[in-house]
Length: 112
Length: 116
Image (cartoon, rainbow over all chains, first blue to last red; front, side, top):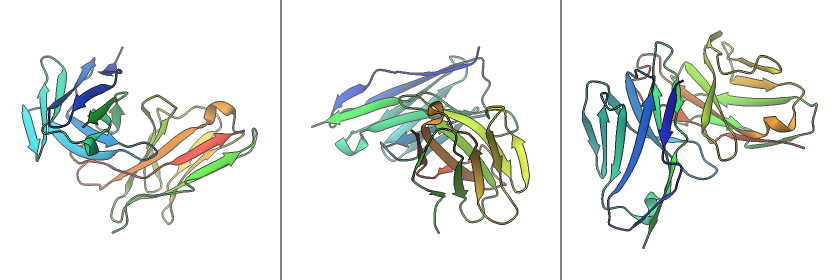
């Protein structure tokens, strides 16, 4: 069966450290993988997109890697801040319909 | 340039009533997607629409749920004869027609439906 798995346990890290979140998928062949941030009571906000033929993408303090052999994406936030505390969702785009299929998300808590 | 607008933000319905959720996409976006998020669960795809067309409704329950995106006006997600299990946050996203998938989607703030 198809699965997109993210750590269900919350990730707690100290301010200034690098947070690394994992997204693993099975039985998908995504053309694109996207990462979103969701705050309580709000809709997801798009952060980064990476294509199947790209290994790495960066944007300011954010970095995403995509390994289609391992079927895994890693999402890094460097120099993390308390304002980075949120739930982070990975989403795959497959097929021609372009719909996003989401993982369940990982809650990140950055403490002082 | 306003983002994706959803209304109402909160909707309370008694069991058996109808719920109508509205979504106005961003200007220039002709593709609309509806997602449902149950408490402590991930976002589940429901339906993908373009103007006057349903493209993919593989995530829609077969009964009581319907969606439309008319030529004029917002997209509507309709739930007839609501039950307690329909209580969830319903999110709408939109995207432009020329970058499907290769483009971050813009989500609205959602409608929180509570069935009492």
